[in-house]
Image (tube, rainbow, N blue to C red):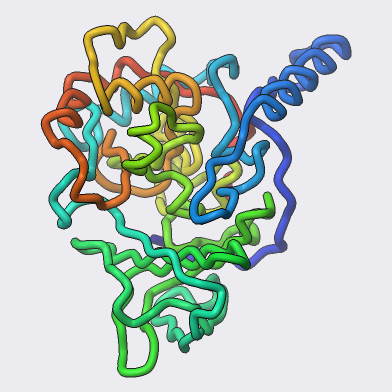
Length: 324
């Protein structure tokens, strides 16, 4: 993750089905606004431990099935598949606890503990955080820690976290009010490179088994450009190549991609990717989608996703790219 200048916090505007205004008549703009409103009202926020995972009109929960194609879609998709991985979708989670990103739910009475930030303290929300010292830590290099507090419905996330004798040490950290659409300050990172929350973008076992994912999923790509699309607020690249995807880019499984040969969990995930899509959240192996660590996942089922080529996706327009 890279640094960026501190900025002002800003409210979210619905962008899930927004066309560039300069290309549209007043009547078309009204029609588009009506479509956005109808989609938002039809959606219900995912719920974890009694907390909404952001309002229904939040970008993570916005239906993008009818969002316009991004004019640079073909180049974005080609660059993602060429920049790491084998060009196919991959579930970066499964029954093995060494894969996936774990999270914990804590009560409103959970005692807060001090957090010391070692790298991006100027872009982190100060502690203390109500994260117990035995909270699960993501295996691997990123060592994310994710905690949802009941009652307050606040999400606490750490990057590169290590427990200390009395608290936590981490490279960066972020706190999100799950009842609000407020973004992080302009240019700030979070526990994720793009300045996004992690928990809302995880595939969770219980929702998949219930038959429907009602939100976008987090995805990593090999290379990104020095730019971001809201709700992302941070870039993590020095490249000005316009064909590389920006952080926050929304990717959608094409409507004409045949999912009839897929079954079980994989089919549920693919249908969600047609409706809610993926959000580029970090640099990593291309086309790796994120899920919560859970021993109940069926790896054989999830392995069906490895048959889906990156070329089956398209980038959609959800807002302009913010660049230096």
